[in-house]
Length: 397
Image (cartoon, rainbow, N blue to C red; front, side, top):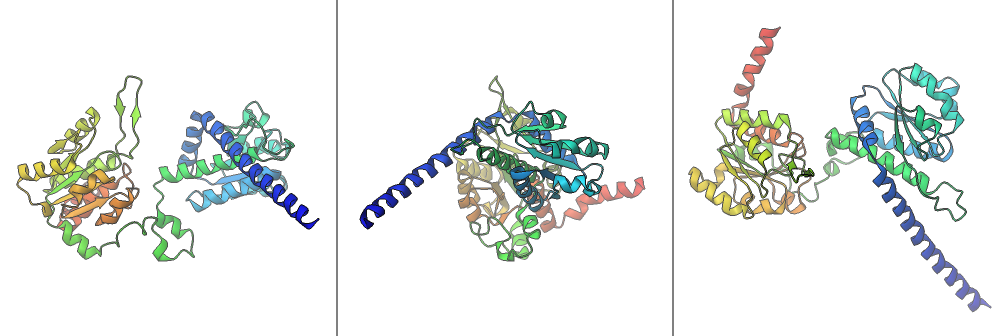
């Protein structure tokens, strides 16, 4: 009898394993569907949070409330002031927590939870904006909200079709997407994250610390940057965030950061020339190069080492007088020849391992400006380049 029971138990456990895999696969399918339904409302939600000078209050009943608590925690730990408030508590005086300009993130799968719906008008009267996540686009909460994000799923994965499963997973995933997209737009760094986690050791406060070579001492970095006469830049992932946007006509669009442009102009004014070596062809990059004073421009280059060697031959500079800023392995050959190898924080692991300096800012978000200022500081020209702006400020006052 014991052998028979063991066989039955093993068979039952094997069936559970198969069921678990099927459940996870079905939930993944539901998330793919939810992702495909995201539209401009999601972008509007990100913009709303970024522009807000208030907090994000998250609320919801039952399972939605539990999900809301986790979303609030994720927002708070990634740089967006947020906390969870139970609907019942708000109905009994805690509406006093709400300030004008706050955002209330309300969760309800049905979108008909009366405990949440009853709060909409009082919250709006207090000057709050309502951001709703529901599973029904036509629900009362979806219609009443300033912005609605759809967490609609085709079915609950629960075998009975009753217990909130795929619907709560979808709502939670949308909350993660909100928090991380806001984090990305704010250039929230690993150091900033560590500052919100007081028990994180200093040695673990840089996400790339395992992959990157040990950071140079400031004096050693300054010594490498002092003789630099030419800063060479990659484009995608360095001057931009690496995203490639293509129009219906096949035209490629790129987004550059204004801070980088001014930094490049100031660096050139201080006596350091600029060059671009990129593997792609783009009229937009050519225009950007012209407007920022780039003296040497190579595009559509597969062999960047060849372009670098041609560049130093034409300029008459030595490799140690050049700095190269890149993000992918195609940039490594010239980087390894230069006096200063510079990388962005989300560069390929091998690039990080060989970089003399990894910027705090990400590519397309001010990383080039950061490097330009470091070079000027090392060469003693920074104060002189900033002086006219300070003089103008004093005259204006």
